[in-house]
Amino acid sequence: MRPNPIHCITDLAPYQPGKPIGELARELSMDVSNIVKLASNENPLGCSQDALEAMKFEWSDIARYPDGGGYRLKEALSNYLGVPPDYITLGNGSNDVLEMVATVYLNHERSSIYSEHCFIVNKLATKSRGARGIEVPAMNFGHDLEKMLSSIESDTRVVFISNPNNPTGTFLSPSDVLAFLERVSGNVIVVLDEAYYEYLSPDLQSESMNWVKRFPNLIVTRTFSKIFGLAALRVGYGVASPEITELLNRVRQPFNVNSLAMRAAEVSLEDENFVSRSININRQGIIQLSRAFESRGLAFIRPHGNFITVEMPYDAGSIFQSLLNHGVIVRPISGYGLPNHLRVSIGLEQENNRFIEALDDSLSG
Image 1 (spheres, rainbow, N blue to C red):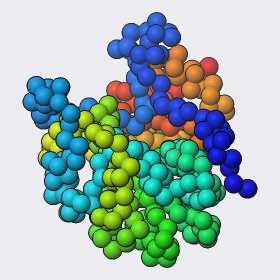
Image 2: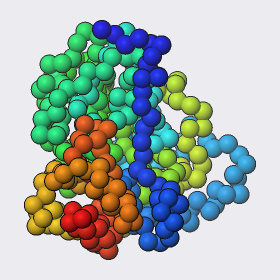
Image 3: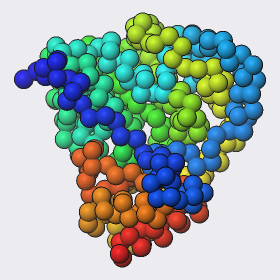
Image 4: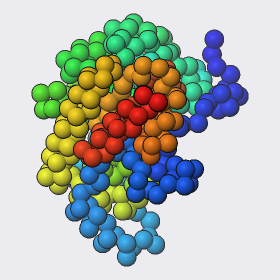
């Protein structure tokens, strides 16, 4: 049965972000310097110093609207990715591009497919357009591509795939994704969300920028919020054929990416040293937390992004609250169908240690 368009919005639950540091500080009368936030998959190193400096040169023109076409950033991305500028759509975060896709291709007569435990925006974008969402049961907490393929119906216009997936951290091999693309109908748009792509080791990184040239129904989305550390600026992008890109730009909001964000993103692409440091810190943190979980007998999902999803031995909600009382913010993910798990972002070594100590106290208390 199709959803009633009148109730599509009222039936939606608002997106719940990670708890802000300031909010916890107010609730517990705690100094913000004593709070560790490992809830929103942010880069613990911050962002490129070059990006911070570059933004200063944009301040004098703050009264001017930004370049609505994003010419300079598209040129920089074109060189960085090896795709023509007319393949690129800029977004207010990559989730903005997901919303554009839903606006173009979904309505109350169409359906989309996404996995259980997938990025919540896939569901929100679908249902807010009155479209029918087909949720495919997860396989080992991740996407079951065979089942997703067989679940495509005559009214299906979009398939959402997040790789690596948030909030589980699961990963699909490039060969499996490519095999899916080769089999899916050309009239079904495939959205490959690669928000955590840069954290993958080179042997796991796909050739998705070449795939968009081969498959005219493919859209790849990425973001500057994760490894580039520009989460507060909200800038992401989609890469697809010029035909798809032209449609997305028809529904893209005017000036959806601001001047400071575009300049910072442009410069961030050039700072290879910062990206390398971020990758190394993340790898060290994954080892640190994985060993801590293993030594405590806690099951966790093998991570492929900048976070680890770990199963708690009892009520994850109460452990989450206890961690808050210790000044440590992580992410409960019961809204993703995982009520017994917590998602923990990778922090600096001392931040990870604070979490481990607080977890020990919470589990023993």
